[in-house]
Length: 242
View 1: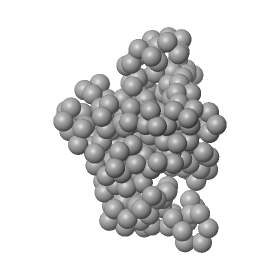
View 2: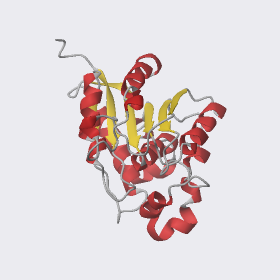
View 3: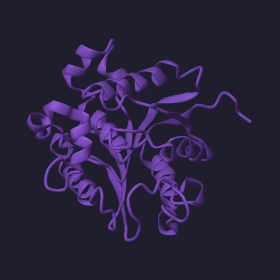
View 4: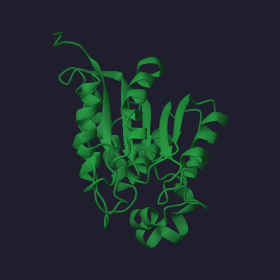
């Protein structure tokens, strides 16, 4: 075994509506990513009553930490991907659209290139605060500032040419975070010439994680065979696009 080999890194942000952190979208995802040869990290970011932008700065600092330790942790510093599930997808995408903004340089030590993600993995993500919003996530994230700042965190409107390549997946049957969140974001990626791959699976509700018995939430809930290939699809995408 080549112990000196550097590998892509995936920093995982579990979901939970910015009110809790789902264990089903944490270590099981990390183990799966490791099976494809990625270095994997789980970020247990701050949630309610913490408010924006604390979690965002924590994710930026996590990317910076992984990049700074690239030699010890055998990470390819040009292939650091932030991954988010549900509200964790909002966090990951928020860094993707904001890493270059000056306000983060005012909150962190270092330069923006240190916390720049090289790719995004967004799984049934909360992205839009408009018609298809999951309002609970934005209310938890913003607290009293919700009425005035909600629109500013509708991430499809913040996509630029500097947004990193993105892999998205969602299901049409998701009744909690509508698939339009991913569709609207992908449309803007297209408009700004950002490479992306998107899969909209026909079956399955919200919070599927790996869609297997191992990540099911009691009984057969969250077991969905039709989506279990998404990690393999993602791994192939990284191989050829990041």
